[in-house]
Length: 109
Length: 117
Image (cartoon, rainbow over all chains, first blue to last red; front, side, top):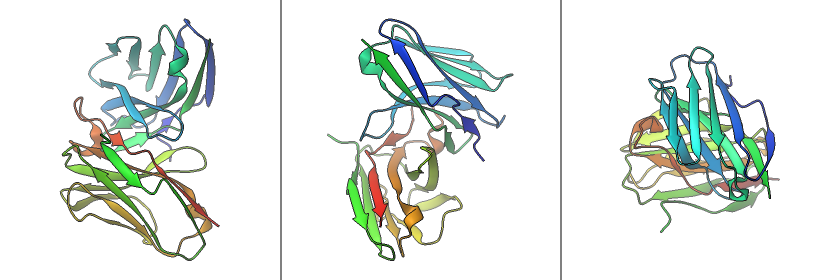
C-alpha cells in the first residue's frame, strides 16, 4: 500500500537547467509534505517542506509546489548544479511519515 | 559532530543468528524511529519511540524488537535472521512525532546495511 509514489526512478538534466521532480499521493489526510535528499552511503537529509494550507514554498534554488486537488507535488531546482546529483525522496505525513521510492537526479556538467 | 549515529555501518551474518543495531542521537529529540529501505528502495517505518514508549509498530515480525534505554538511544534487536531481512536500516529522530512540523523534520543516521547469507 504505497501512499506516496514517485513514478520516475531517474532524471538527467544539464547543469544550469531546471530539474523537476514529481510525486503523487493517495491519502487525502496528509497535511505536511517534505523532500529529502540522499547521497550514497548517507542517510536522507531534509531539504524543503510545505504545509497543506500552502501551494508553494521557496528556499533559494529549491521550490516545492503542491496541488491538493490533483494530490500532486513537485520539486523544482533551478539552476541545477552537479552537486545536486543525488536521490530525492518525497514524503508525506498525517502523523507518521510515508516515503516514496525516490528519484535519482543526475546533473551533467 | 554527528547528530544521529548508528552502528555498525555494515553487518553480514548467517540465517538464524541474532543481531543488534545501535542508534544514538545527540539532538535532544523526543522521538526516534527505525526505517527499513527494501530492495525496491522504499523507506518503510518500522517503529517509533517517544519518551521510551512505543507509538507505532507497523506490521513487522516480532523477531524485531526495539529497545530504548533512554530517549537518546533506540537499538534494534533482530532474532532468528532470515534472508528477507537483508536491507538497509535507518535510524531517525525528530522533536515532534512524525516529523510533521516545519521546525521538526526527521534527522536520519547513515544507515546499516544488513546482509543475511
